[in-house]
Figure 1 (tube, rainbow, N blue to C red):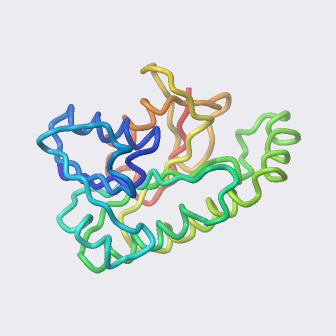
Figure 2: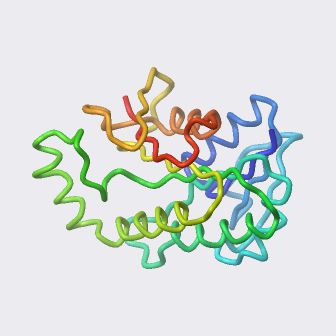
Length: 207
């Protein structure tokens, strides 16, 4: 499989690139600074590009069987990296005739029937209060992806950590009670393996 990874220098992106290479896939990693991707492999192509420029992204997505966006930003960043990046990626995929898109956002900006009382009444209101800029970015990303007309999957992880592999749970279009965290390793595993049954759905993932 030919995979293009955006956000390849982030914690999840590096995991995804390495796991894809280990599985024998060909990977194009789109980066701003190649020095921040300490991974090598004969099937790895590193492309430096402006993730907000659709034309600059066309060479990265052309021929890709799967395009994955793990774009993220620092908590106090003012630029909506995920949404603007998703819009540019969608435009580039349309221009090159690519279809399969997997995008990481979040569950933190959404009410969910699976939320327990503390999550619903305390945790998520605090998240919406102190992370309103990021949550707006997530919501705009969701809109760009769901309106893209592509074969999309949105992935909504719980809190991310740097743990190793352990069994995880997924559910389509709604949260799973208690599944509040996931390692970057296991999130990357799902981004790589998400099948056609997830197309057109948001997948909640956690332990």
